[in-house]
Length: 74
Image 1 (cartoon, rainbow, N blue to C red):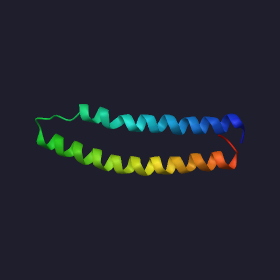
Image 2 (image 1 turned 135 degrees about the vertical axis):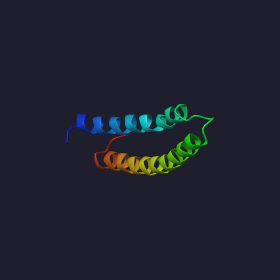
Image 3 (image 1 turned 180 degrees about the vertical axis):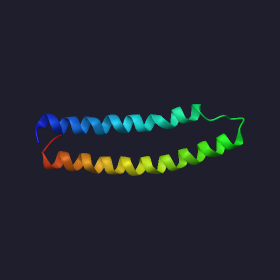
Image 4 (image 1 turned 60 degrees about the horizontal axis):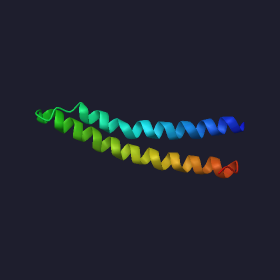
């Protein structure tokens, strides 16, 4: 694996995390505060999404550390 490929993978992980972190903000804009069903549905989505995002962030961090360690990157 080339250094460029390793850096590209690490950059992609960072970019993906940033995009995933911003999604709940967009979701909040789609929730109608006057509609209880919309509120409930949005709340359930965001709670589950946050749990999954935490799992992904932990996994991505471990993958990043593993790549950096194996290839002696900073």
